[in-house]
Image 1 (cartoon, each protein chain N blue to C red):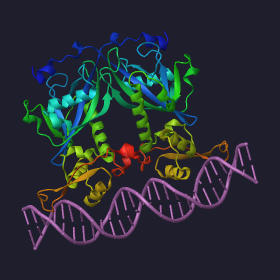
Image 2: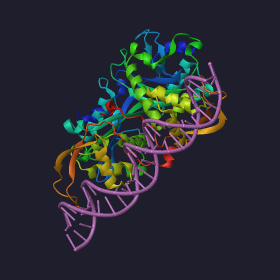
Image 3: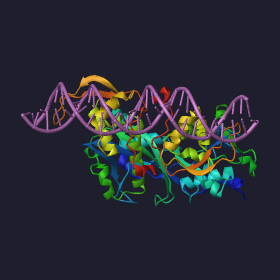
Image 4: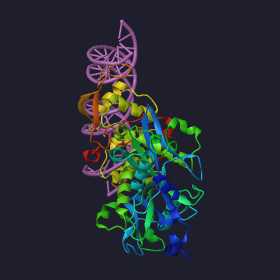
Length: 250
Length: 250
DNA sequence: AAAATAGTGTCTTTTAGACAGTATGAT
DNA sequence: ATCATACTGTCTAAAAGACACTATTTT
């Protein structure tokens, strides 16, 4: 039997079943720290461990719909609030032994959300939390979710460079300082306020003025800031690049 | 039954089976045109149509291994030649009706290969070809493969900007002109030879000199060119950016 | 000889980044 | 009054891009 005959004879139903799940790396910025949505597993395997929100894809829904549904279920979000969440496919994970029960291929999605109500405020308290990503290292996560999260965080950092998606972490109207806080939080280092300000305004379509200003200055003083909303650009030209760190290059 | 109970009760084996396949968008540059590997389908659905090489993931292999296996099967490649092919995950496609037979989620991979022998040179002639991507518009491809190819081409164009992967389209030793030809072919427009030359040499770790030169000048004259091999950089800093086209930005 | 190509020099424009400075408003 | 903040001005360095030019090799 050569390769060709093998392929022709290959019947997937003759093999042990494969299941497809979606998992969501949902990020938000609250009180100047990047937070990640995690749920506590209610049954084996990894019972009691924290895991990404996710679950089996239903027969009639496409992958992105499944991811948005899982996100809605765990956050209690719906309607316009849910629609404003940015959702993009991250990657798929399918190592044969990543789930001890059976072969499961997971399609991971990445979500950017403005600061949301605590999941605990909903019906089932304590089974879903927004955890600061700095607290992740001390947690034992289920499956290969630590790797998925790493990939998601790196994608998020990179997306802020060449897309205007940082605005998706904010309300529809925001100040340049709030936008800078998103960059500083996701990238994990401070930026020069003056240069950032000028740079954002100089990129065509990144933000547009609402004409309004904040009601009050900052909590520690300062003039009222002008308000902006997201512009119509889908890519930033020129991009806002992170300074190159030697380790990431080689 | 609330959402939580539904999830707990949800058993994937109670639903119609889902199958997982890998499909490969394999690109190569031959005679200054970007080519794509396609195979002719030998059975329904889409019998006789061209499609991406791919197939069901086997139980014991991970996704990347499956993709490399499919590539090897269709190109007849193996050993060192196969190992030099760059392979990365592209995206997954899982619309419920993308395959008329059953629910199939396909994990697509993107491959960059140096100019390879024609698949027809192998055992089964005429069932696999390298097709110039300019000829794609006139073909009716199977499934949603046209969309996968679009995504793959855009990913390839973008990868040349900030990674040194253009070298993967060439042999281990190459000239700056050959490297420029890869960029021009993938991006689809000419570059300034002098500026490109200086730019490539100025990016740390992009290429390193072999000390040698070509045996002869170009076919239409000119001095012998120095030979280079890929350097140790995994990212280009600063990047080689395509000029921003207004359409892609908004 | 003519033409094409490899590689370098130089100048201009754009962008990034450092730093200073002014005006505003909270405490 | 003090201090943090919102912005703007200015200068320097890095990078991108246009253009010119020399040397080398093929036909």
